Image (tube, rainbow, N blue to C red; front, side, top):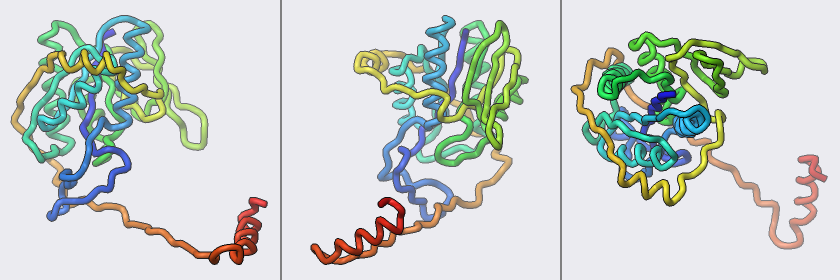
Length: 257
């Protein structure tokens, strides 16, 4: 089984997001970065599939030079090889040029290795921009069947069985022939942190770098908007022993006593 996983460098989950003055980019000056959570599950799944069925795995990203850290994190988790489509610092490509560049990188990697990828795993959407587009666009460009929102992966001969949650409960089950594209969601598995030996090995591994000109955007980003801050409300019930009765009243109101 020859598997490719695509990951994206995104601000750490839970970080406070601020925008640049033109409101078109995330101000990353004070942020730490990580692998998008959906894609971390994709990495863990690829490692597990190779352990069970044999084969090899490759991680691919498009991003600025610092995104190499996310590739090495994936290799520390157990991925065999890494490919980095390097972009300029401070820029985030739109879905169309991103998909075009990743498609070129996949084809170039397949040609270099002399074999096709059997399974491509992308995140269902990135944790920052949430475009829901790149995996589908790449699958279309490569002529591959694609199932989105996947939370379970099994194999039946030359077919992959992909399951995703159905609205109202239950599962939608798809059987598609390999090679195929699956975009996966968090909850597919429970990724484990890389071991110290894994991190040390990953530091020594080679990362293949590619450079492409940015293609046409097609869609134009007008602006980003952060969710409103709901704030918080605090009610002081009193001070010292005199507040005890009000605390009891509140617990009764909440049906906790």
